[in-house]
Image 1 (cartoon, one colour):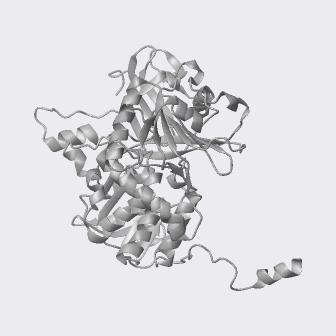
Image 2 (cartoon, helix red, strand yellow):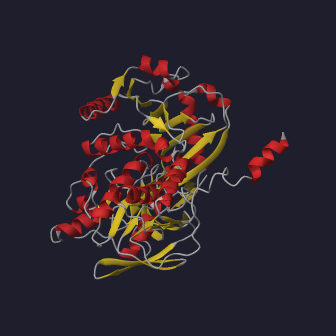
Image 3 (tube, rainbow over the protein chains, first blue to last red):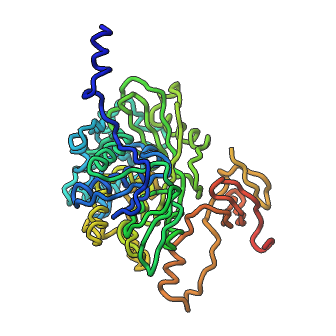
Length: 413
Length: 85
């Protein structure tokens, strides 16, 4: 009945309020300015308000929230890393992930699927045994399984991979999950907004004013802001921001590309990854196959995508799942991955007082969103690095003490 | 397909080439400080710009220099080391 519906159209209390407050003007000063309105920046704003009572916070975003790598990844969440630092850090992140939908009162479509890293060679299998032992030591559910187990979980797979890369086994990580990535940014943004943080989209940072080795303000495209604390969480744009404060890092930018197929009937429950074939694949709740490969082989600071990528990835996909030959590719895109030489992030304090860095998120940033926000909020609020990020400081390069995270995604080992 | 010009073999598909990073002067390891050496070993200029880079045409093992805009991904010129400034 249309008349009954009209009642809801005119009601004042029923419409869902907008997710964020739109602020016409920037304030003159903030306690903390966060550069980058992606998952990491918004999550830091959220935990600054929730855990530390710091709410005079501005999140500055050049484009729109979650439009960078937060919306460009393949949404995989896992904690079966290789180094003790990595395992502890990502395990805390997985624990935070599991409660987020309830905490935000927003459905993140967090789906626990199970995650397989396939081994096609003896040496890959050996690394997986190593990873499984490190994982188990830290209480992470992780084990090496045989080809039969893989076949049972993904019956459509060709275990011989076209005859040239037979699957010998896999590292199976039961907590492996996927989540709707845009909703993560929205959930953190909404929570931060409710606690008083201001989210300013379409606001570009043009300069950072440093006096006597201390941060004292940020020049934006919408005016100058006074602040003593700046958190930089801008992934592939990090080197451009670091030029403003004259900090050198090992960060280098390579594009990471991904693509999705047309939606098809649900047939793939787990998440599958193959380092040898450069594949990762999962099926989304909408039925699309979400597929990624490895980093582009050379430096580019833009989000252009290439036909070479689609050709290469499709060829490898058909080795593993020959029946997909008639499935069409719908979209492809790229994100700028800020890589480090040891595949671990760079987090914490910097030589510039009041300038905090959350970078080096290369190909492993999405799964870390909650724990990054939490640990960076602690670091910014107390001016002391959170214990979970001790292995990730910028100093480690000057001290020749790299972290060596060989469990990272889409990089050759 | 992206084409790159090898100074010896002419225009070839970029998949035949291997990228080896920006050309950077190496400090003398015997005389420089630990900090200067760490800076050389680890730190990179990750910001976009027109950069001189080492590339190799793998099929013929030809090492050469490419001047490339890393934001637009445009190769401006390529030459053999020592042949052009």
